Figure 1 (cartoon, rainbow, N blue to C red):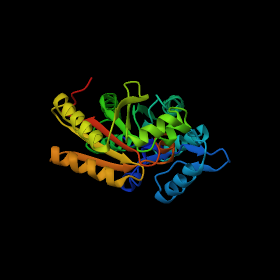
Figure 2 (figure 1 turned 60 degrees about the vertical axis):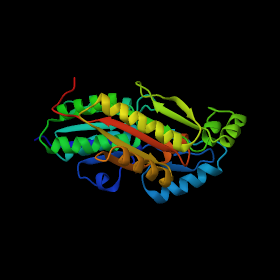
Figure 3 (figure 1 turned 180 degrees about the horizontal axis):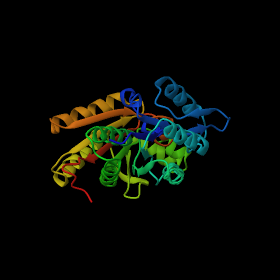
Length: 294
């Protein structure tokens, strides 16, 4: 079995059990506010809460930056020195960030020392965490890094990710919605539902009147996915300080699909900058069975 490292960027917001796995390494993105306040993207709750306070008080959105190339090179050198033979990186969608391209570029320089694979998640957050979990399970079962990478790419290309934006403030600050439209939207309880398209870009999916209608729509999408992938799917939820809505959606999923697998984590600074506090994400990944992928 090849000694294999897994790299994820910080937008995976890994839960503690997976973040502490000895073969999992995280490379951070960062943010800076107009007043110079700097944040390193993180899943640490206390820092996230402080970030939300600053975000709500800021008239403009902070600017996010992909990982520093120097830090990525340092990490790759560390993996070589630790005796790793292969590395699989799982990164934030290339449709919204240059992180995947950065990782891919740097890894090409290490092909003579490591077997390198870079996976475009076509998504972020909990989808990246679940892909990491699946990679660990597959590697521990004896699959080669190449096969595992192929499976992750197959799943990420067929995954679905939806985002419900609770507050429209950040869409206004980001120039995606005018203030008058935001006010009307709030009064009518309109929930913009966004999604990652096949290229991994975030687009408007639907405008739904209430949270309940969003959840029912997501159940419909889950049913459609199960019909398309009879071998099974994995459900994922992520939120920015909206535990109540997250728990409600989880309950609805388990009621509709009692034997389903549901993973949950929290959104962190880089992603919340755009989705806003209170946002909720829902993801669906098809399961791999008997290596039925091309």
